[in-house]
Image (cartoon, rainbow, N blue to C red):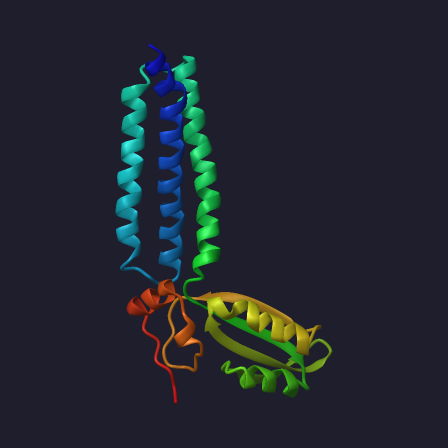
Length: 202
């Protein structure tokens, strides 16, 4: 009896929480991979997500006979807690993996030579377009980079033009263009390029 109680009130809830964290994290990762354009890898992740989810539900249905008793309540709480924690872990995965590319659109005053030069000196490709804003002529800088380099570019923008307005968007696919940092990429980024090859211009 003590072993049965230990399993029902401690071991089983822990199994449910850990399994739920795993499958929800994989679900979040699957969505991230799909939005990043990794459509070949997302179904593989989805397979393991569904497999773990089925095993969790099966374990609950076979180990918890009642629907309203205390044992069932603990299992349901563990299931919900695992879902919440899995969502958080999935968000952390997204930040740590830094998969894909992003577009930074910077709007600055007409005189943006210093910022443009600084970005180019740090080997970031920049395309500048003249435009007109509410207060007169402005320049729009378009920068497409690997997501792992985002913090570095933002730092350069803020150091050289603190009042610059900029937006950041995800990019699903890139063809040609200039990119840097290939030798410093993580294993995940290299795996990313196996599915989304990016050609560097000379």
